[in-house]
Image (cartoon, one colour):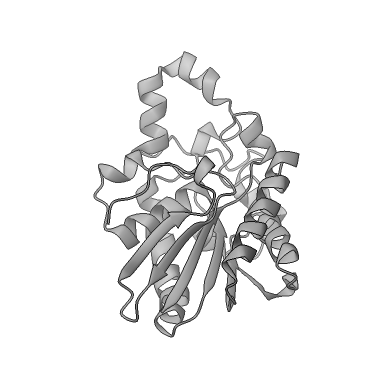
Length: 239
């Protein structure tokens, strides 16, 4: 038996400002830090020993995991960072306010950009300071791998090969793992794990700072799945 914790980072400063964040490397908001600490307490109650800890390259995900590890009384030098777990790149929407964009383009258009499977926004200009090519955190990522924009499909196609190569094999070996990532990279993993079609994945919403606890049998069949904080849970996937 193995256990997987998927957690979207705590509320970030740009979540608070309702801006499209994507690959921009923003800080956790004060409430996001509290969410991360609460997540750590909820995990502590499970009384599990964890073997591996994965995060994206982005500080909001890494800092969330560090706060969780601190609550679990574990050192944070065990974190394995992977750019493949980064949030989806929102192209030329990056940095813009979601409500203002709804007024400008209409709610249906923005919803399509945010939730559709294979509809990326227009590319972000590579000279834009918000482009990942101009953000120090990504200087070690191969330039040809850095996107100008992404759909959820694009995000899935970088997240899932990493998951299969680095997480799935360890779960098969009976290890317990925490993955701290982002709304869309976790949606990609959930699409894979729960075999969601392209329509149902658009309905999946991932709450910030609330651990999704998944228990597998020896063949990686899902035995149970639940959010550890039921008061802030979203509708769970049917499996």
